[in-house]
Amino acid sequence: MKLTLTPMQSRVLAIALLLAVLVFLVVLVYLPWQQAHRHYDTAIEDRLDRTARYLRIAAQRENIKANIALIRQRNASRHYLRASAPALAAAEVQQMAQAIIEANALQVESTQIAAHKDDGLRRKIAVNFRLRGPLPAVQKTLHELETTLPYLYVDNLVVRSSVGRAFTPTPGVQPDVLVQFDLYAFARVASPALKKP
Image (tube, rainbow, N blue to C red; front, top):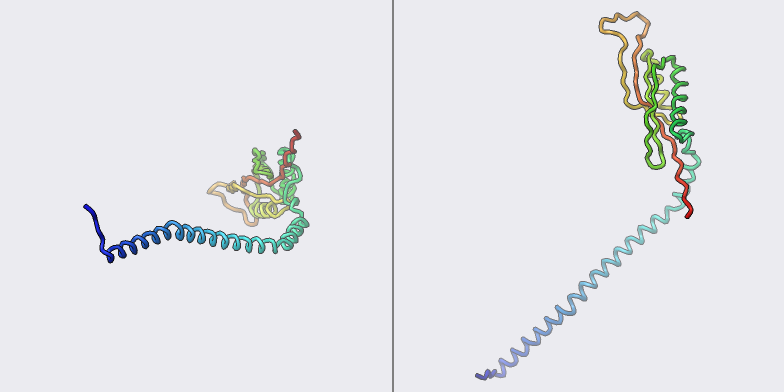
């Protein structure tokens, strides 16, 4: 059976085929081209934004250099213990604390050096103290310990009364309290030397 088309049907079929070819070309060529164009526009915008941020950061370089020089002048090492060896650093903490404790007329009942902890280039040195003395002297001692240089930190503070419940206070006399705390400070750890091959 032979299919014959009228001239009008032939024209309509030709127009339909032309439209199909145009749609195929649009799908095959124009849409990928448009998608690539959008991708590159986004990439260019991102790079321009990143370049602008880098230029803003670079413009702050002199200000940052000045701040670094100012920090170096402040001598940050004064906030750390002089010794970095655990035993020497613990002795340094004990010596500093002992001077403050004796100046405030407190009695040291015991001291115990705790294990040190390394955290990167810092070493935490802790010493446990057990003291006895009047409460005002304890308050003054704790304040002086935490405001001295190099920085000392009081942790795990326990204050107990040394008198019983039936105690009758004498006017003008402060009863002693028992105080136990950890006193710690930080020392710098020397960076390991680079091994030569």
